Length: 171
Ligand SMILES: Nc1nc2c(ncn2[C@@H]2O[C@H](COP(=O)(O)OP(=O)(O)OP(=O)(O)O)[C@@H](O)[C@H]2O)c(=O)[nH]1
Ligand SMILES: [Mg+2]
Image 1 (cartoon, rainbow, N blue to C red):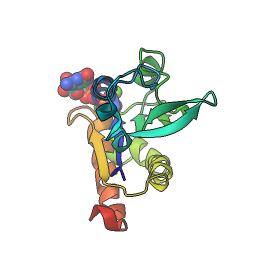
Image 2: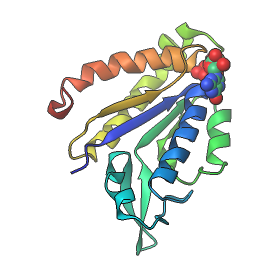
Image 3: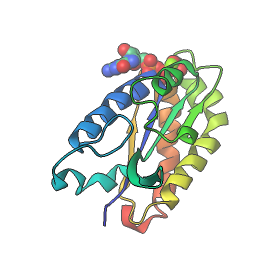
Image 4: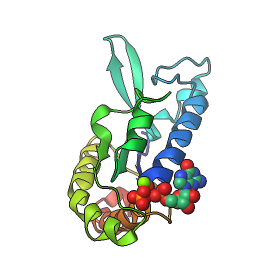
């Protein structure tokens, strides 16, 4: 049984580093940019379930979809990733974009703009968690400068700490 990990990437740095992270994982598991298996070694698929969810694609082949949530308080970086090389890899409903940004301000990410978004973030994480058999943990990618990754990132971390205690497999 895979021990699933749920990734969450926040802010510009988080989403850009995240895009590279997922490209690396595709190469490691022999997957193409749409998450379809193109490799020739069964070992590549042995642990693919840790980071990817398997879904039926076009009724026949299996598509591997990142177990990931992409968050930013402004839309531009997420729009670029969605329209980019691996944009169709992600579940479309796992992108969450605000409109105001956090303007390099930690407090906007933690107390105001980010705080208004945290319930939606937790709802997305809950949905991803419920699809897991033995959730191993959450992985966060974000910067410590800026406003979104830093401020909203801190808020997410404190909220995750609260919920992790309810998951026996993660304690
Ligand atoms: N390594 C790396 N660092 C980055 C990248 N993009 C931004 N940064 C760094 O991240 C810091 C700024 O944070 P951002 O991630 O841009 O800010 P944000 O989280 O989007 O927050 P706001 O835009 O203020 O709402 C600076 O130190 C940048 O140098 C990236 O793609 N890779
Ligand atoms: Mg930003």
